[in-house]
Image (cartoon, protein in one colour):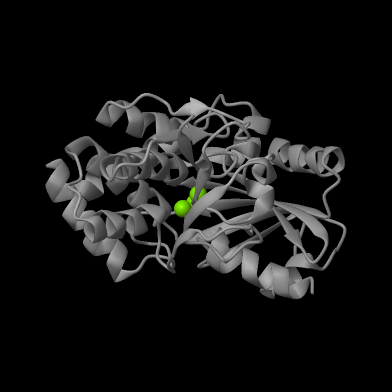
Length: 307
Ligand code: MG
Ligand code: MG
Ligand code: MG
C-alpha cells in the first residue's frame, strides 16, 4: 500500500491541491504517495481540478492499511481522519495554529505562518530542486489565491504573493487576479443550493477548552447573494447546534469586496461575540468590520474568551 497525503474534513481547495502537489513531489523523490480526500468537493475546487485537468483524489476514510499519511492543511485531530491512531503520521505540512496531532515516531514537519499550505509546498519543491509541472503549478496558484482571498486576507504574506507570481509564470497564466475573481464568482453562486450544504461547505469543528464549537464560512463577492436565505441559514445552524451537541455554531458570511463579515451565531453564551470581538449579537447576527480570516481573526479571540 502507498502512503497518502490528506487534508482536512470538508476539504477546501488548499487541502485538495496540497494533497495533489505533495504526492507528486514525494513520488518524484522516490516515495509512493497518493492524494486522498475526506469528503465531497466544493464547486470552487471542482472548478480548479477541471481547469487544470485533474481527477478528484480518492475518497478515503480509513488509513489503517496504508504506509502512513502526510497530514496537510491542518494539525487538529478533530479535523483529520478518524482512524489516525491506526496509521503512521509521516509528516505535517500546515499553516494553522499548532493543533493536537502527535506521533510516536519522528516526522517531517513543515509549519509556517503563511497564507496557504501550497506556499509551503512550493518551498518544499524548491528545497528538493524538483520542477513543478504546469498543471500542478496552476492548481497550487489557485489554492493560494483562494486561501488568501486574492491577497486581501490578513493571513497573506509576501511569501504567498511571490509564490503566486512564480507559479503563474510556470503555469503560463498572465492575469492571475482575473482567474482568482472567476474562482470567487464560482464560489459565490449559492442560489438554489440547499441551506445545509451551504452551512457545511467550509465548516470546521474546534475543541475550545472543552467546548465543541463549529464555525462555517462563506466567502462571497456580495452578501446580497444570501439576503433571501439568511433566516433559513440561521434556523439551520440552530438545528445543527442541537444535532451535533455544540456549545456554539457560527456561520461567517464574508464580503470579500467590503472586507468584513456578518456572523450568524447560536450559542449557549448570550454574550459570546461581545466577549470575543467586542460586538454584541443582535437577532442572532453581528457585522464585524475587517474580519476575513477564520484562522487568524475568528478563532483566536473566541478561544481566548472561552478560557
Ligand atoms: Mg483549508
Ligand atoms: Mg489552507
Ligand atoms: Mg479558507
